[in-house]
Image (cartoon, rainbow, N blue to C red; front, side, top):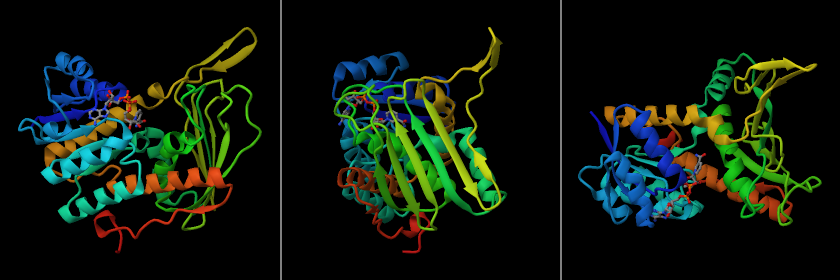
Length: 338
Ligand SMILES: NC(=O)c1ccc[n+]([C@@H]2O[C@H](COP(=O)([O-])OP(=O)(O)OC[C@H]3O[C@@H](n4cnc5c(N)ncnc54)[C@H](O)[C@@H]3O)[C@@H](O)[C@H]2O)c1
């Protein structure tokens, strides 16, 4: 079966996923596209032979749309995801699931009432082969119970429009999701420490930031977010357990020896770093939809948790205090007891 996908939002990542669904993933075809900028929708739809529809509701309702992909701006996600749930169609929503905890909960409640998972959230790091290897090691018990995790998320630079709050909401959100998954544990509190700021930044920005998370089992996580590190895009993660440690591998790169030096390249953007993870994420999502299975990737609950935890981290940054994350009880649909 070919899964016919309708896309809401034809901006940067919408176009990237349309290309991926058309040329990289087998068993999928983009049949409908919408964007509030109609010219942009047409530009994305025409090369793949898709129709342009007037809005998100029309995409969800279309007879030739089996599954919905939401790649519009974050504050619009909830409306489109709720429409897809009401229509009983599988929906892949780029992160964030929604920008407020209340909207995320509305989605969780609608999906719970539906009784079956339809929503997947676009946290692609769970599909990165290095993180998958780390998870296998942690789950096997080889390093014993995890006690501490050290992480770094470094970007070479960011545009002037980037704010201090975005360090949690847009950048650390990926670590928040992947760490909850790696540790199979919940983040219960968050704190932000701001060291001396780099002078290589826009004046309004607090950069770098050190985020300190605590999990329900008592694991302590330190995450350095440094978005003007200059030298490259660098993602580091090391989990220390009772019997050993496991470290995220750096992307494969040849070693070069010349002029009395040994060097290996450091990537400079996240697109190359996670391109393969995005491909695997979409292959698995489409295969699941084609088989009529519930999605196995990040759930609406994970989207809710990420929004609550990153919003609490913004509060921690602004107040200087340790902030409890205060999540609701996890419903049975997402593996909880309540
Ligand atoms: N997983 C990742 O690593 C990753 C990477 C980049 C972006 N994203 C997420 O993807 C989403 C889009 O990001 P982007 O970089 O492509 O932004 P973008 O601004 O390039 O594109 C967003 C598009 O959505 C359109 N749009 C906005 N509201 C709409 C609506 N109600 N209906 C239809 N179209 C609408 C805009 O006109 C624009 O073309 C964001 O939520 C972002 O956080 C995730």
